[in-house]
Amino acid sequence: MTKLEQLNAEQKKWMEKKVTGSASAIARHHKIAQSQKEIDYYELGDTISRAAIQVKLAEIGEIQGEIKRLTAVVEEKRRTLITHVFGEQTII
Image (cartoon, rainbow, N blue to C red):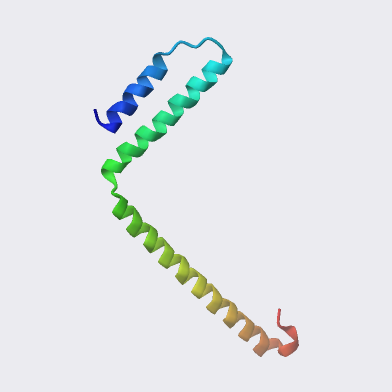
């Protein structure tokens, strides 16, 4: 039995379980929600590989670094412009 089949069986078991009170209803709800999250994770894992996710995360990191660099360039140019237009005393 694969992990996905186990999770589906576990979720089915929790859905069929009889509720005896509010505490057991809450516990049942949490177990079903947790098993659904795990099922979704394993189903998604079939379509998107971890390597592809790591590549995309690396690209995001590079883009964030470029954003920081460009923000610093813009800030420096802003300071230079303010200094040029208003003089040394107006640097913010």
